[in-house]
Length: 328
Ligand SMILES: Nc1nc2c(c(=O)[nH]1)N[C@H]1C(S)=C(S)[C@@H](COP(=O)(O)O)O[C@H]1N2
Ligand SMILES: [Mo]
Image (cartoon, rainbow, N blue to C red; front, top):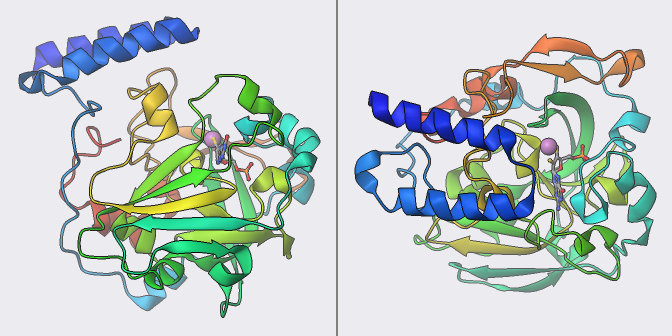
């Protein structure tokens, strides 16, 4: 990146570190949008740009993939996994979801599948999962805020479910939306993000065998605070990509907008692959606090963060040739 661009980026980072209130975020978004309209600047990750298409890649072997399905690292205690959560629809505090999400009605539950596919439709939770037996996957979950957990999830590979709707050749991305119901979700009163919570994946990421549509944890159905009845788990990406309580899945040709990227595009990119070499503009991502075992939250160990959250062997080939500083 040319030097003048770097100083521009640094200037924007300083701004970001000073910004707390929403009106300033919004004016900053306009500033960034105007910068994005000048392609000659080559500003990293500007909101208007589409990422390069995925490379034609050598798929990892079955053994390589399966090595990602479990880990012998110490598990997070169930009480921490279900009591220290991010689910802004129920408030921004870590204890808010476990207290407030009891009002989320998870049955009946329907999911609308639409967009670039031959068999769109509105299906119930049972229809969506018919014929699948949830499998257990012990995944690391690394929050962009700098903490991580190791949790035994139950779920079905998302790709197998998506195939049933027959995505067309135009389906380059998949967009996901969380329920947004003010009657059930007290956090929607606050404009902390632009509701509904939205996330997205490139189609190859959505189809990757590690990407899980989770229905449970610790051998039980998902508690509301963890995203019942259905949430995504994309273990090589920062936790915010793992969208909870999904009501819509849409196949798209263009990169979909996502809630965190809309709010602060400099801080939360579309890809959000865990990367210790690319810091968040306001803090380092080189290490993380591992909330696990008897240490719990207070004495959590600080450990080094791994590229792709330790799943590089399984997923790095999807990003071959891509500048991971630009496409953060
Ligand atoms: N709908 C929705 N999904 C969400 C969030 C949220 O606020 N709303 N938070 C995300 C973030 S930042 C993280 S780290 C994970 C946390 O998942 P957990 O609470 O099950 O550990 O959920 C993600 N999914
Ligand atoms: Mo997070």
